[in-house]
Amino acid sequence: MNHPITPDGRYFVVRGRLWRMADPALPPERRAALTRELMAARRAVGAALRAEDAVALGAARAAVDAAKRALGERGPAWWTDGAPDVNRHLVRNTLYAGWHAALRGDADQSGRRGKLSRQCRDPPNPRASCRTTTVREFVPHSLTG
Image 1 (tube, one colour):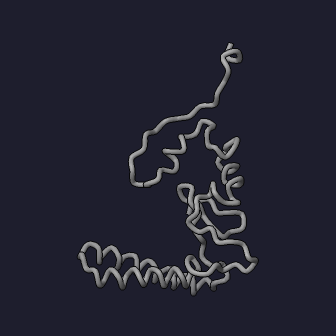
Image 2: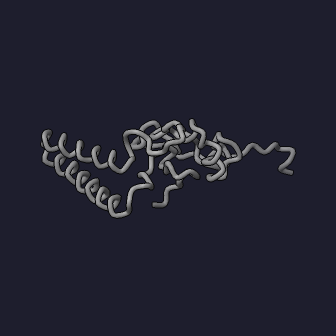
Image 3: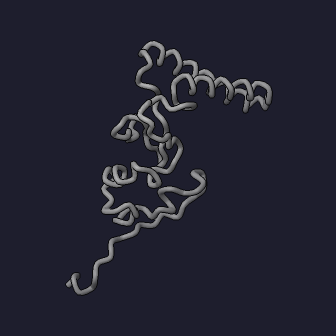
């Protein structure tokens, strides 16, 4: 997985959103079995959608949810230090904002240092097309010589 993982190992970041990691306390063989169940359930969701079978779709989605809960990716947080669960939150709205900005090389959390503008980095609808514009740092004319 090439997505950045938070320093505490609780989340990974995809398109500016935090997603909860599986419980690291799970034994490797149990985690592997649950991952196989999750992938089979996801394939069943796709098959039910293609077949337009609402009953099978409901059962497949329930199987995905059960596997994700067993992995610790959904349901009660697997950590015990009382920290809030910010699963699916935008990273910029959490305590991880500074870490993520530093990881991307932003001077601040605005994302305006030669990066794609926020509308293109974090569109409200990920499938929507986005105008690609680059925002440049302001340099006064007196410094450009």
